[in-house]
Length: 162
Ligand SMILES: CC(C)(COP(=O)(O)OP(=O)(O)OC[C@H]1O[C@@H](n2cnc3c(N)ncnc32)[C@H](O)[C@@H]1OP(=O)(O)O)[C@@H](O)C(=O)NCCC(=O)NCCS
Image 1 (tube, rainbow, N blue to C red):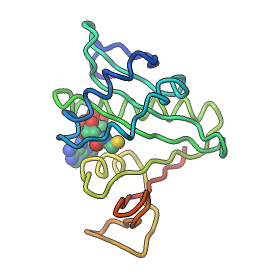
Image 2: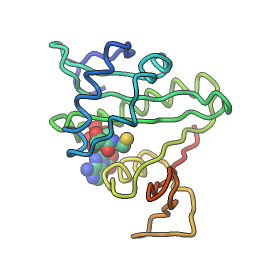
Image 3: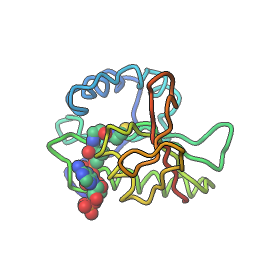
Image 4: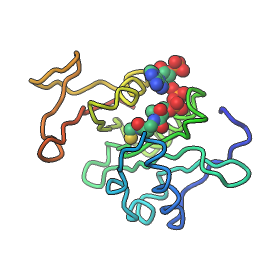
């Protein structure tokens, strides 16, 4: 596990504000706060992780859960790593920890969705063994699901066996 100085723990409701506060800086200025409402820090804490340094400064986080309707499926909703800590396999470690826990719980697949503009996220997911679901629309070699999350909200749909 990279960064032995780092503490991994389940989030609590009081972490919501500090995680939302890093979304803008960590996502290059995109305002994504509407995608991470407080409910994730109330109802999905047991399958999510926050990573912080000894001073309590947020280093990374993963918000994920087991599907309520399809218990064989796990879903990763959000992952973020402090830009100063990227490229050190922290994101990969968070994913691998989630994969292990969900496999142990009985899940056979993990799903995630990303935006086609987020080429870093796409490279990261492909490297971690995700496959994009086919689509009749292919852009730059990537299958894109048009209007997936609403008008003009195009997405790449990713799955990986566990
Ligand atoms: C995507 C993100 C979580 C990756 O975290 P990270 O800790 O830097 O990634 P890792 O070091 O674990 O990288 C694992 C693999 O992903 C790939 N990867 C990661 N960042 C990449 C980049 N910028 N370009 C290309 N490939 C990349 C690499 O192949 C890497 O494997 P390698 O080290 O063997 O080369 C991080 O860049 C981030 O927080 N981005 C902003 C938030 C975001 O877009 N989140 C995803 C959508 S919710």
